[in-house]
Image (tube, rainbow, N blue to C red; front, side):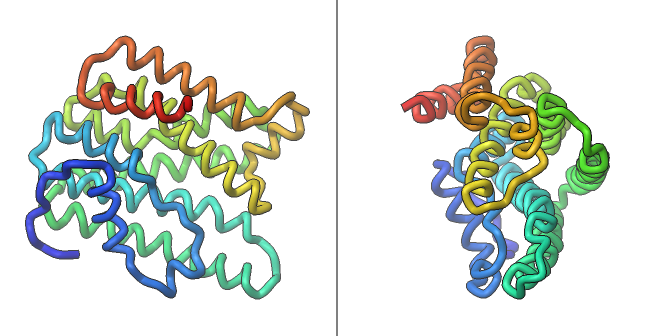
Length: 248
């Protein structure tokens, strides 16, 4: 990663392109699962950071968040490729390595701007995330609603911690439903590829009516709308635009 100063990002597409340029490894991308955050996710984190941070630091922390988030998601998928088929075994092994690679990238991004406070925050928060994931995984009898609540907390935990660290505590009501909505999008893609997570299996075991994705994503959009109606800041303005696109 270059040591040059990151310029101010002017669009979601710009920050997504910068993120992707760092990950241009054809062999790696040919085998590992795509858990990279989308432009909306990166832009929301960046928008919140620019409320309190200069552009260079805001950009570096956003990239670090993206790498850490991708690493967390790819570790979730390792167990879903648990077969003896050769391609699946290779993919599982490379997913493990990719998770470690993402961890190195997030640390490098933070170190580049000397964000010692964020290095400490990321370390402690990611440890908390792993502990919560393990606890959820070990409890095989969790209901769907319990797993959904756990997923909501875990998906937003790092972004919420970052917002709180920079004095933007009011963003949690936006971040939690937003990132759960995004996680459900990824769950849908994985399910279509034959990878059923414990969340989807819990939904199926309880014989829920309708589509998990339609029902729960609609509920998250409603919660986002409620949160947006109570706020007036740069991030809420972005969420309003996001809601308009999601409802089309």
